[in-house]
Image (cartoon, rainbow, N blue to C red; front, side):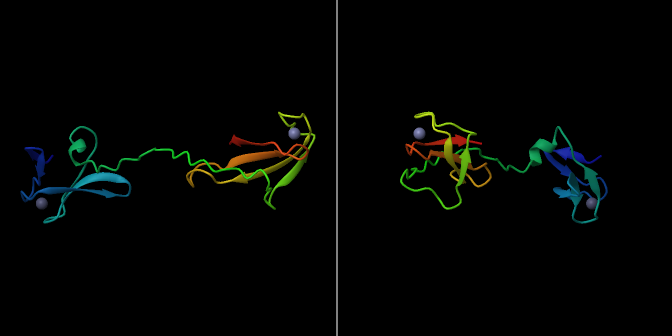
Length: 122
Ligand SMILES: [Zn+2]
Ligand SMILES: [Zn+2]
């Protein structure tokens, strides 16, 4: 095993500083001088951990639903959904990407009779 001095590891073969790297999805310590490698996992590996913070800040980018317009991609549902306002069962349905691209699109519904429009997050 490599010697560890002050959090820095040195090659047991040649004494050079070992550098962390990822190979085939596994973390290891690597000596640039002699090619010595040592698997790196847990514990002290924290020192070398690449800090890639995955930020989840869901930007609730609300879009204004233009109730006067139904996109041409909308399909008309009959007898499947009823309007929460008037109870009519002919509802236009379409999907729109309103949030981050990696999130499911928002479903929109619009009553054919009264024009009431509502959304539903998938
Ligand atoms: Zn070495
Ligand atoms: Zn309605």
